[in-house]
Image (tube, rainbow, N blue to C red):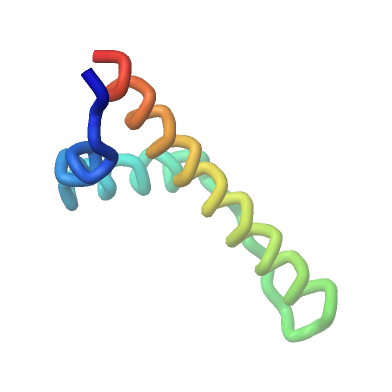
Length: 68
């Protein structure tokens, strides 16, 4: 049986997303931000890393759902 991606999306509650974000925040990312070119680069790098971690966590949930 082929599963519909929209059915997976319906399983993502606000609480599920919050739990993922909380687990990412538990990694204690440090962000030193200054209004210099290097500071701005560090900010964008940190945002990118956090975005990738969130995406991978949701992708993992999707694969678990898909194979259930």
